[in-house]
Length: 224
Image (cartoon, rainbow, N blue to C red):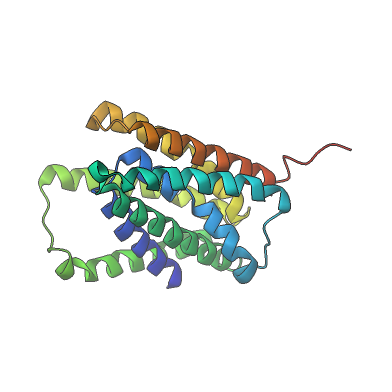
């Protein structure tokens, strides 16, 4: 139930952030979830952050601050709330992955995913009266079906399956391609070109996450 609640809150916060900031900034910030996973793993899963991963975490935080600084510019006033919503989405997703990882230690993937997505859908349905009701064109509805089939069943579900075999940190590593992909698709289909500071901050964030995850997986240890 907690995994479903965190996932529902992730959708609400992150998707709302897309209305207030660029696609690239939003996805780069929401991908900081491994940092929040690491911060909470020591408490929830007794998995502490390796020392080699700390420098990468600091670099990622600097990147996130650069993106947030873009929102402090008076001409980009709407970007800061969007950035904060994206970070909230990252925190919610981190909570989801931790609950997911804990549950998958003792449950099979298929029944767990069925329960997870059903509960998440019901929780989101309960928010409809407070979010303006169900207002959607047929084209938008078809896009949502595509999201459900392609991105959730063929994407998100693969990560849930993987959590039965590997740690939440390793799964998070696979998510690092999202900001780059989001930037490319955003430019091609939405004309959403990131501003210079957002672009630099996003690249720094992704670099920090790469260094962090490499450090957490022991790939940055010096050879004796």
